[in-house]
Image (tube, rainbow, N blue to C red; front, side, top):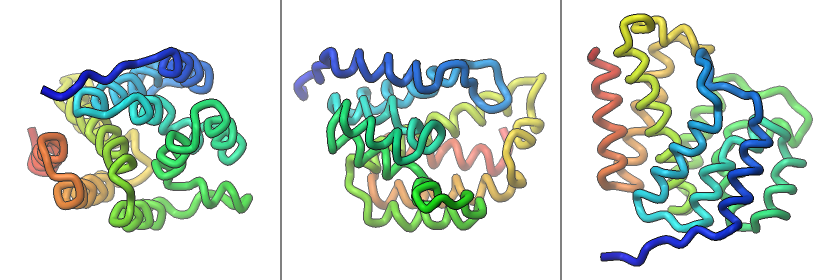
Length: 198
């Protein structure tokens, strides 16, 4: 049996920080506080053997992309250290555009670049990214199975259903190759259901 991960006041501070950064934000198309997603990703990271830095990065993985760009990244680095900042930065698919003062690249271009980036990503980054993608896929499947939502779930996305499924299929294939194990298999199983109906 592996040694238990000990969470210190750094984790407490990260949770408060994430709640502040994403305060008032809800999950797309829902009334669910955004922090629920961050907690789920952090819980998944911890359940699959991640340490405190990975759990903190999981709480903050969207803070830079969604809430402040490079200034936010510098603040994360200052508060939580280089390792956490490196993971958070790598979980963003549009930070480079923001750094150059440019608008986000087209959706497909950003997703293709993110998929390519995974091929060379450190295991720390892969573990947080996989936990994030699994929770997102679980949320899609859950709402797809709700009678009052069903296929309307796909209307939440800025691109057609086929493009969303293309992205998740490619993520699943990448993670099965790069980080094989129970969690990548779960993503694969969810994607299979999404592609072939519930």
